[in-house]
Length: 414
Image (tube, rainbow, N blue to C red; front, side, top):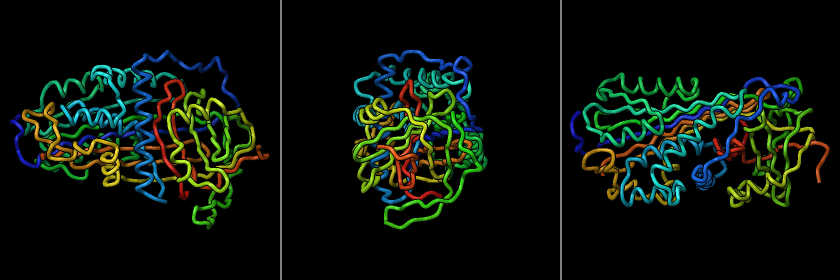
């Protein structure tokens, strides 16, 4: 490979995450049939998850503010993994800025990378009814020389498959996008819009999750109900009905929290619904790792009938995501002062773009969701039932690790 000193040299990193939940079951699964396969987290894993979740809430708040009253859905896990692989090529002040933004504290590179590797392995076997896989790849421009330690670090810790391509070939983009499509089961069909000879590489992260609701939403009970928009108007939209389920719920003066389990109840969807006379914007400042843990620790088990909307979203973020990351503290990575000298000899790279695509569908059978992240680098008292009929925040997470896979806000169901 040739040494990379060309002007306008790009590096793109992509991450994909898919969540699926299939057919539901009516009754509690027999506990002995599907006991959670758990282990205590190491101290560093606890710190990494806490920092990553903090990044999740901070990035979501930034994007939510920038998007205004639009629906939002992002995968902070996908963003974190894609940006951590990028971080492995950063140095000096750029490395410090990314480390702070991603919430890594004082951890060493070895500790950060090892904790991501071990956490991904742990998530695979927690629930026998849940499929979880994580796949990563590096697609290298065969006209450039990439530093071996950068490649081997992502191979060792992220199990990245490495492949060289002719970036001047029209088939390069198709090959990369086909990999993303395969790993997200067709939900993200493209993450790379163009592959040029001056691109340096593409790093792709893909996560796949498939599980089941623990309790069933009866399709026969789904019917239109009014959904109240924040501008005061209402729309008619299909609402699902859960008659015989159990879930956690918490309520205070500003919000209600509803935690709906999947499978053996290690994975769940958590809804944060603004209380009367409050909006999503009102509760955004309350969203944090500590508050979420507090609300759930104080939640009660409920079997009240539940109504919530079906919805499907397909979203893409680029400029607002780039702005959000700058606002969160890693602005230097987008400037001529950026230092990614651990990627290619001489460095001279900066992030030019960050793209993130997401998909989510929530219905009676469960939840299907996908996300892809692309980072480009260039030189230089309770009622008898509960009805979720207004905009709300929602998360998909795993309990034993506290890992947040997705976070979003539904302002208008579609």
